[in-house]
Structures are given as structure tokens and as C-alpha cells.
Length: 174
Image (cartoon, rainbow, N blue to C red; front, side, top):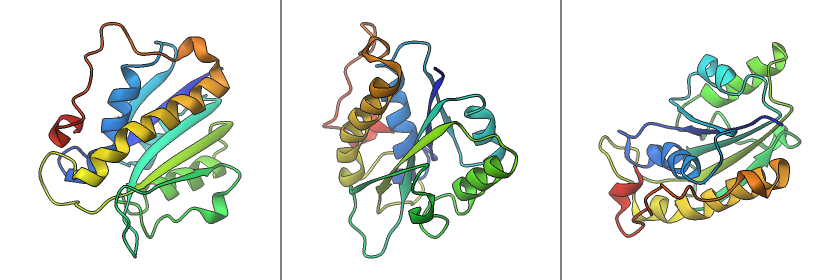
């Protein structure tokens, strides 16, 4: 079973760094056989990142109206019609394009799950807003649950060498 976690975003665009922050924390908690990476939303890089995967877990920041920063939404490959992209993704058409391109080219993972977190601050700079920072740990837990239900609990667990994150400092999450 090949599992991939892909954090979408840009650490230098405040809350858009949520996907990479989750990916870094997940990487510190999973076995080496789970591929964890980040992407800026470029469709071809996403296709490469999930190539050959049985499961791809994607994490992305989204903007919605009305805004409820920190709210987490879960979508999966069985609910594509409900996916609120491209109108709300912080990457424009990146994720939607990658999913459609993957479908057309028969390069989608067997199953995928998207955790979309509503954010508020996409300005230039590092560090997550308090609402986005507060969503990191719950999303990490959800991602680990997805991986555990698919790959078995033996692949999930904090690396003994990983430093404990400082959740009181939003800048530490980016």
C-alpha cells in the first residue's frame, strides 16, 4: 500500500502555509514508507507527487464566503462534484486542474482525500493566523487517522527524534 501526504501552499503567504505546516508535522509522526511532501499547487508537480499511490491525502487552505477561519472540510474521491474548487482554493485552478488532468491521463491515486481549511490571511509574510494555527493539530490528527485506517497503525506514530511542536507560537507552524 503506497500512501502519500501532500501539503499544498506557500510558507511565504501567511495562512497559505497551512498545508506545508501540516505536512511537516505529519512527516515527523509517520514511518518512512509514507511519502510526505509539499507543493505550491502546480498540477504537474502534484501528479508526480501522488504517482502510483493507493491513497493521497491532500491538505490545502481555502477562502470562503462567508468566512469561518479554521473550519475544516473533508472531501474525497467519491464526492468530486461537491469540491468547492477552483473558486475557493488559494492556488486558483491548481488542485482542480491536477485532479482533472490526473483523471484524463489515468494518473490519479486509487483514492484521495482532501482536507480544506478555511483561512483568512493570505498576505505576504511567514506565520499562520491564530485560526489557521489552531487547525493544524486537528488536521494532523485527521490525516494520521486516514493513514492509520489504510496502512495500519504500525506506520503511524511520532518519531522519537522529532521535536515537539510549539503550538502556542503560530510562527512555528509555518
